[in-house]
Length: 81
Image 1 (cartoon, rainbow, N blue to C red):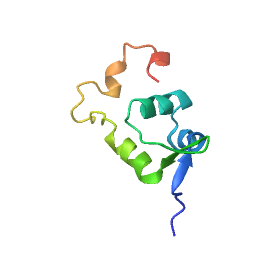
Image 2: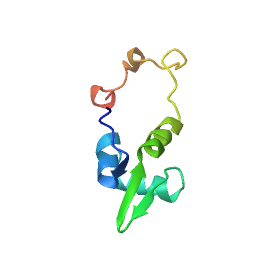
Image 3: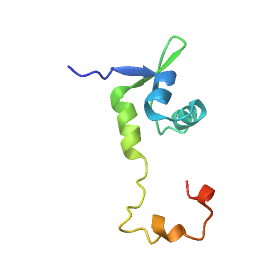
Image 4: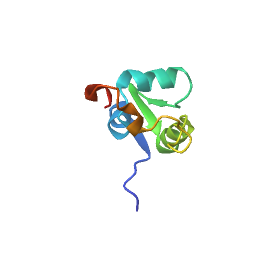
């Protein structure tokens, strides 16, 4: 049996995804992340959370990215992070 839960609280969504509370609520208010209410508690169903994450835009791969990490020689080391 899987360790995944059927639904997550906002605090759990933040912990699982690394997103901040404001960002999660913004995604809910914009209709990009579906949420349910149970009393005062806001819950996000497992399929809705993973669907939201799958729908996020992909970053371009290194193969298609004209800038590579080695192209940052003129950038101070603290800016390369």
